[in-house]
Image (cartoon, rainbow, N blue to C red; front, side, top):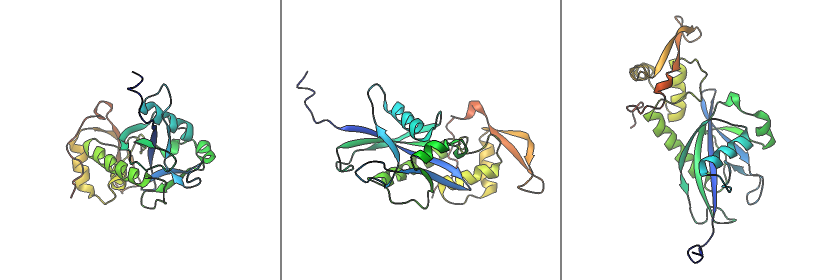
Length: 227
């Protein structure tokens, strides 16, 4: 048995791609790395797997300690294991992406770590292979947004179809035709129309909607056409 375990030892880490939504843009939460190598350079939030926890637990711990985020949408993106991805040691990282309501963030914790929200279209240089991780997370997010209706984590409890379309445009990074989007979304039967209106979007006003609880996880036909 001892001979079986006589193999090289590697570190296992988690890196969290934290997406938020504000002012019609998809945002990414980054923080300046607090230790060498690459101290002070922009990084995803991450940490090493600890004794007594699985990878999901590690990702949740990182989000709680560093950003004060609890009970959020979290999904695995993939494994990154390039030999020289970390110059300090051999580190295999499992990446996750999270969708969070920026209004519910713990501002004090973010400020304590120097964290900042960046537009997904104006990201700074990042350490290691974190740019590759973000790109893979974006692809995964777009895939999931096409399979099931996302937005609950990024929108208020009551929202209009225009507001939902704006979120989808931010995720897919291109404009979507409102009439076609509205027709497709309503055909899915996963939203509940409310009897109150947002009076700011048009002269007649736009109805508010909420997500049907029992329908949130159902796999749907493709929502956004890809080219």
